[in-house]
Amino acid sequence: MRYDAFHPGQVWLDTEGKRIQAHGGSVMYLNGTYYWYGENKEKTTGKDKIWHWGVRCYTSKDLYNWEDKGLIIEPRTEDPDSSLHPESMMDRPHIIYNKKTKKFVCWLKIMNQDGTQSETVLTADDILGPYTIVREGLRPLNMSAGDFDLAVAPDGKAYYYFERVHSETICADLTEDYTDVTGYYSTHFPHSHPPHVREATAHFTRKGKHYLITSGTTGYMPNPSEAAIADTWHGPYTVLGDPHPEDESRTSYHSQISSVFKVEGKKDLYIAVADRWAPQEMEVPYETYAKFFDTIFDEELDREEKEKIMKNLMQKSTWIPDREKNTSIADYVWLPFRFDREMAYLDWKDEWRIEDYE
Image 1: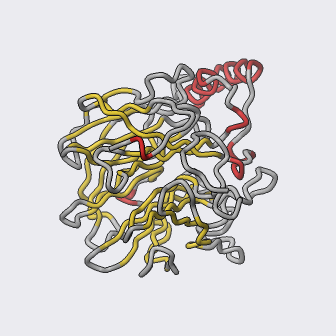
Image 2: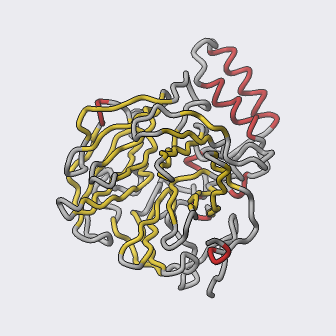
Image 3: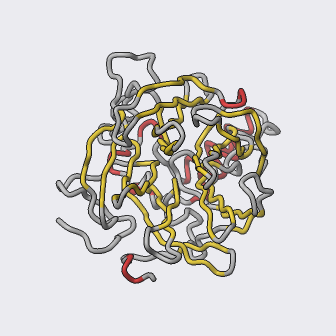
C-alpha cells in the first residue's frame, strides 16, 4: 500500500504493511532522506511487563511512505539490570548529530522503579547504529529528569529541554560532546504538581523565535497542550496558550506531541509529530482523570479525603493504567502548524498533503 496524504489518527502502515512503531520519537533529515525513529511498542500489549522492544527507525523520501530499517537500539533481554531491558520503562529517544565529534548522540529517558527518572546516553557513527552506551543512570544537574527534547544551534552548541519531574521545565546547556550537561541552566513554567506541570517539551525555531510546545502531566492520557515563545534559547518564555483552538475535548485531539520539524524545501511548513497513545479510551473525559491526578499529588489533602475523591471519580469513569495499556496499537497524529503572527495553531484535518503548501 502506498500513501499520497496524511490521515491523522488512522492506522499508519510501513511499506511492508505493518504498523509503524516509532513512538515518542522525532524526524531527522539527512542527505535527501527523512529518518523517523522512536520507541518500538510492538510487544507492549499490557498483558505482561514488556514496556518497549528497543528503538526502531524508518526512512522516507516523501514523508508518507516509510521503509522499516529495523532496530537501531536493541533491547537487552538477558540483562535485567540494564536500562535497555524490555521491562525497563524507557521512553522518548532523541538523536542529534555532533559535527565536531562526527557522532550521532541519542538520549533516552528511563523511569526507575524508585520513582525517579534518569537518562541513558548512547553514541554511534551512523544514525542507524550500532549505538554504544556512554552514560547510564545519568541524573542531569542531580535532578530527576523526565520527558525532554534536544536541540542544536547553528554554532554547534546544544541544549537539553526537560521536565524536572513534577516541578518545572529546565533548559540546560550540553557539553561539547553532547553526552552531559555543563551545569548552566534556566527554569521555566513552575507548577506545584500534576496535571499542571509541563512535560513532553518539543522545541523548534521560526523566524528568529524559539518555540516550546508542552503537554500537561497525565501519563498516557492526553491533555491540553501549551505553546510558549522566546527570543533566546534560555528565554524568558511567554506562554501563548493552547495551540489546538478547535479541540473541545481539551486533549490535543487525543494526542501528545513529541517533536516538531520543518519540511525541507517548504517556505513555512512545520509538522507536529504526536502519538495517540490510547485510541481505545478516547471517550474518557479529560476532566475526570485530570481531577484524579490533581487529587493524588495535592499535598494539602489528607489520605482519607483523597481516597474518597478518587473512589467517586472511578465510579463515574474508568481508564486503563499505563502499565496495562496496549500501546502496540497506539496511533499517530501529524498536523501542520498554522501561524497567526507569532501564535502557532494546529487545526484538525482528516486528510492533508505537503503539496498544498508553498
